[in-house]
Image 1 (spheres, rainbow, N blue to C red):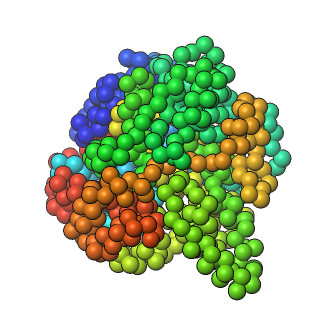
Image 2 (cartoon, rainbow, N blue to C red):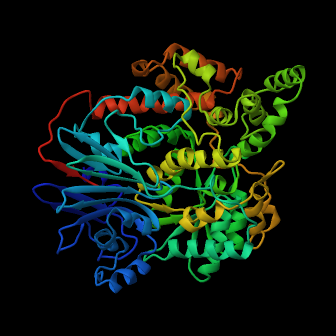
Image 3 (tube, helix red, strand yellow):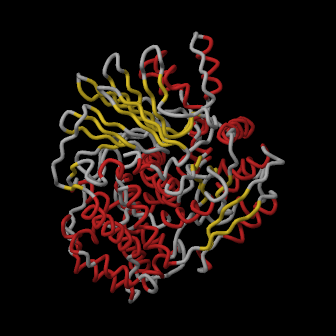
Length: 607
């Protein structure tokens, strides 16, 4: 298991074994230098802890523990975990700030505690089999080379086809479970107990007029905490608002520090943001490092990401992010990124749609029909995030109820295309009833599903495949808490998004960056599937293994043909199927799917 995780932690590997438990860890040294070997063991109690990630408030926690007679000797940040557990029990998770997946074994109670950070920046999976508990930060560590017998979770795989990800607690396998963001699981002789120690309470929080000065203090402190490390670090910079804001505040806090800014570049003009990123980097005296993405790199990169991580993810940006991380890892072990700002501060076009859909639904039926016909007749474009693409998505779901409409807009494959493929769309999950504002509810849904299990999964698996840790200051607990108080008019107003954050950004950035049209990281996959990747796509979509989960491969090939003739834009559908096809090949070749294997110990654990 540790060998399968070696790409995440090349700096050290440690193991602690007893009659009842084996815990291990690979380490990427960010804080504590050579004094950070895991597992961490409390000599008096025998409590053992392992952690993947960072505890950003470890200095405050050290002082707190010392005042209670528990001095922490090791310099590394994760060394505070055993003492915090011994002082507070399972409530210790509430006091930690950072990005982390943690396991604590208490031999006195024969109890295992598993914890995932609030936003879900770090992954954590577990399984119970033949009286054993086995856990890891990546599925591949559990199942590769016949470590764990597994079988498909067909419902989860069908939902993957719809949304391109696996929302916790689901995974692709029916006996492997994912700890949710802000989740805690305790396992002992009494069974398995699930709890939530934190949730983003934007729906329930009373709104108030936001203060630019108050947020400035909070955000600067978040960046300071995450950049208070013992190693060199860099920045992922697209030239958009979020990454530029992280970069400019980082430079303000570290005015003399040499910093490199890593940027993806594409030859396709509408997808390339390199010129904007270079402008920001130059103004901040950052060294720009462009990373050009070529379509022929994608098949090999996808195969490697699936092999190291063990799960499919249908975000085409997963692969370029991995290439960017591979280049950055040549220079630094850590980089700061802008993830989380859109979900917290209202940055997506769908949030505009949530506000105007009801007005569209109240138009006369003949007018709605006429508008829909005009929109659907708009030609397919290979450019990035075109108005025609957004309008087509809008009219597809404008007359549905709020959360169902949002689900449709966020789908990778629409219900109509799923039906053609032979897949029955899954029923909508239960939401927060109808309490609170619709915008609050869709933002929380995005944060807990598409951010945690999509964008952050992309970032974690892509970066850690090259042993590069990504940190997101917007996902600091204090920033997330501040965002819960924002009134609607400070998030979305008319056709404008991120109202408050843009107002704040003007303190640091020029209007040309702050008010530049949002693009987001995307890939010209539509064009590439019609051109250099067509042969590879044809082979993947014709893979007979797709039939194992009910996909009609002849229809998949028909969709590719329609896409190549530009009859329709099926890029997201095709990519979702291609990733699944590649993953199914990995499952067949390198796992014990469907087989039965006995484990020799009561617990075999690894982080």
